[in-house]
Image (cartoon, rainbow, N blue to C red; front, top):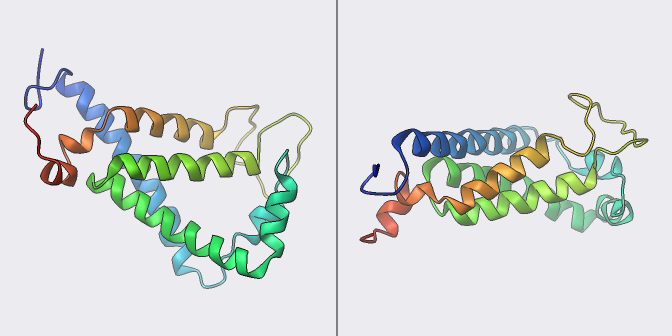
Length: 162
């Protein structure tokens, strides 16, 4: 059964993929806006709470004022732009890659491993798989199924006859 302008998946499959894209976009957008609206927000605490094999690199970033300032801006605006891109379907493949990169860094900064305790409270008890890894995997799916070319601004930009 071909739907949504003769594409190979069912309407329900497209709706699920689009809903996933928009929901993850909302999460990114909201997180970015909260950080932008808080003049005291900084990634320093998160970076200093890091553990794992890249711990020293994250510590270096937190303790280098110029680098930290850049990271703060990239984090805030990266979250906002990725979120907007996913929600409205504008350059959603690029937004997916940006989100995958950010979530990879978040995951590597705070890997959910046995014997690793963090000062910042966790939302639950995790072992290897946490919300960052789940959202990262979902963005891989969104990247592989670019629904924004069916429903999104990308459809207007990249209007191709398929």
